[in-house]
Length: 150
Image 1: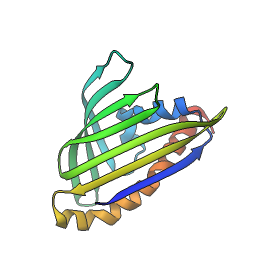
Image 2: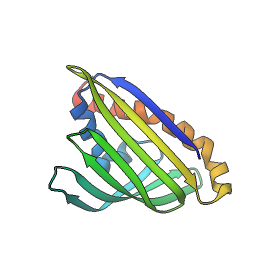
Image 3: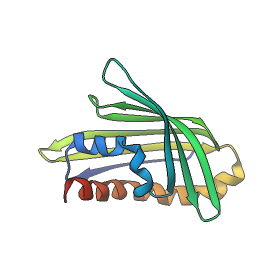
Image 4: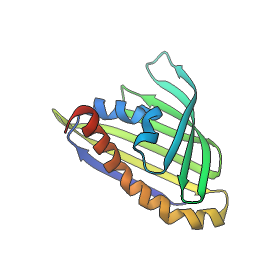
């Protein structure tokens, strides 16, 4: 099963980076391949976590697919867990972590594993997804620089 992981130190607070990644409605503005994202529902849990269900449409040239995920936001632990619910994948899991490394810096961890239902689609999209994932960290860091200042 294909997977990708990356940890990148950024010059922003972990809390700010968590908020930026948790703000999924803004993804179409800056996330590679994300054409649209609609939140279907959001639930605040008693322990401070939030759970939302979202539809994300990814597009590249002639390829366009929408998939549904459950997103668990845990601001206290500074983690985001994305679990696949429906769409072109057989499996998709995505985790984000945010660790303070200084007064105004943190490590942003990104992990994703996925498998398309169709082996043909997996063969066609695999290399393109890999390239997009490599751009994710820099896209979020660039967005943080725009939102919070360089």
